[in-house]
Length: 319
Ligand code: ADP
Ligand code: MG
Image (cartoon, rainbow, N blue to C red; front, side, top):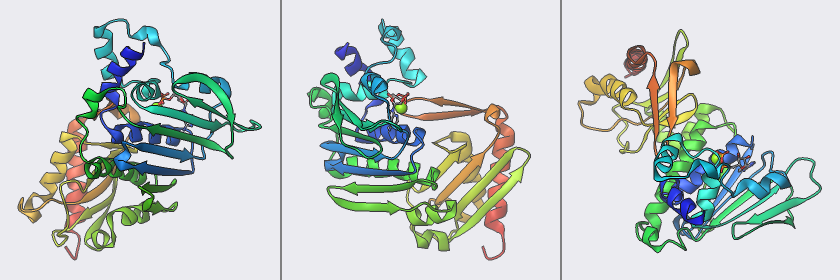
């Protein structure tokens, strides 16, 4: 079973940032209002995420590090299928198979917290005021072949930072903090969406960006998109969220690039943070552990809407 978990972990746990993604998403799902992330050595040595969410009751804690439905994986075929299904209910088990994992949690109404460590599957009493603390240490300590593929501390931290930014942009209603090797790199109070964008992208971006706000039927696009005068845009200053979920999608990227085609002349990268919302029935979200794919029911309408909304915003007086 450990071996199966280790194989499965290869899909979901590519690097520290993928651990951080899963653990952050769990904290968000738990209704946290505040989340604190501490990383050591790019997250390889340690990832610690503390939240003030609903917590995990003792009985559920006993199961949290175990695969919810082990029987799902009886063959390699199944393994591939699980990869495309997105490891629901299996992220923590996969993480615990390749890193020293402990969870401390106090469910609302519980007189005290409980703690479970990946290597001994029983709970022990612990001290914690509320919420959950997940600690993932020594990633790939037991799978040296995988450890070899990890990059430098700086690179792994950059990936974690990027993951953190995506969650922070998507959830301005949650206070978030990120520290690396004891140094705080982000401290974000609850804010209005555009204020959160400013906090993460910088005042310079906001000063050289147009606000986007468009609506057509059930489609709505909001956010900020840089003007040509903004010179600091890099290849990874492009954020697109669909119904609150960060996506990299060819259709959306294409619509944005087309809206910029006439003003940027392809010379520079635009920077943008855009939030598209639409009827959930109009979009298929296939959440693979490593990538996020969306398929729109009416792709053409979505493309046109994004293109026109952005073109109009960029053309407004002053541009
Ligand atoms: P999934 O999120 O797909 O259910 P995970 O392996 O990520 O699977 O988590 C297993 C379960 O552990 C979750 O369904 C949730 O009930 C519980 N859990 C994990 N992290 C937290 C957290 N920070 N707060 C509350 N519950 C949590
Ligand atoms: Mg999860």
